[in-house]
Image (cartoon, rainbow, N blue to C red; front, side, top):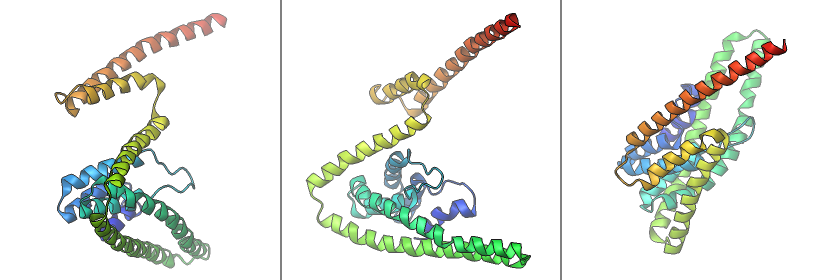
Length: 252
């Protein structure tokens, strides 16, 4: 619970270290439970699912930290893998999403108090109020995650006793679909249509070239293709810019 609370609060205390991402929280879970490789596999799958989710402005987003942390715990304790993890993590992340909105509203009291202290010139109360809010937030996070962990323990025991094969197969298929959906959401945000052929080349090499290729080799091929694209873009882009400048000069 302390590890999860730390991962949730690191953005406010230490800057954007990205410890709250599932691939990082799963490492801490694996370190505590003594199974880092399997935990990282679960975290990588959660990372794929939540890769395309982004909180824009005031829109609430899924709590990937708590969901990934609890899901990894359930997967390792129950021994049922990612299917059981997803069954517990997705509802937990949605519930924590709304809880986060409630906490932000409640802790807005401290913002108002600090503004009033500054307006009244009581500067010596600003830092203590800020630290009080920060410590209370950590304690609230710890208590809530601890309650979730107790529920996760009971859920893991139930899953280890009664987990039908049809449900496991169905969740496995849904998990694969969610992985693809999360990555597709990310591509819809950042993919440039001119780069789609390069994506297809990389996907083909990774999926169909067999075990002879590793990620270093595929990365080297991608670097070479990116270099070729850069050279071609600069060459033809420069010619277009010169032609446009000449046309403008002729019109003048």
